[in-house]
Image 1 (cartoon, rainbow, N blue to C red):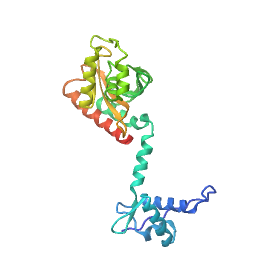
Image 2 (spheres, one colour):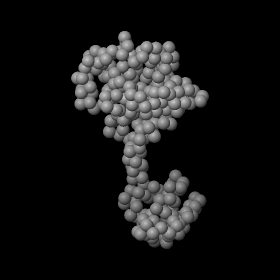
Image 3 (cartoon, helix red, strand yellow):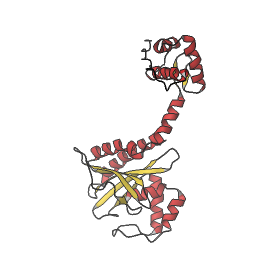
Image 4 (cartoon, rainbow, N blue to C red):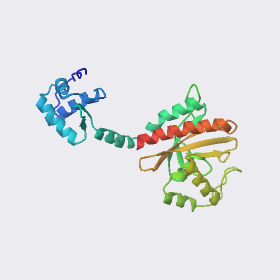
Length: 263
């Protein structure tokens, strides 16, 4: 096995008053760049400039904290605690920040407009909106609100929202009839929400605006709470048949990817 690359020591920093923390940080830097098998103690000591006994003592504590782990072959690697902390940090990131790459990919692969929406007060807010299959550009929809019924994203949110939120909305009837195809009957809407939860995505065809159609999938965090939706929309004549099935597959995959970063 090749020896670990020697890391550069930290420059003098008056803020670092606990030497063991700086030394542990140096060890983390070595383990982060180590091969998959990890590093031997002697390689870690050589790379950090620490005495083997000092490195061994620090590694023992780090293993106890699950910040490092020792394999049966005597190699050291970053521990599972790092992965746990990374997931927690990611879950605090803004859904827009995490979802923007998915919006771009979907826009390029579908050739249709793609929205990323987050919940507002009794509406969904379009946080990101792009269109174009070659040269991407923002749509005029960014920053606008969408109703919770008659739209794919709104229905998707209601389907996955906490029961008390869903019930409060449904009890605030009557529902406005946006087009002649809008579901404005509570019984039909509730049945639609059940179907959305079963299939994992929502659709709407000319329910919000005549001639348009959309599909939306939920973005869920580790507690299965809905944090937003991602949707594809365009002319109803293009979002149908086998092509619609392919777009749904792409959409659900990107929604799962964003949700995984929030878990």
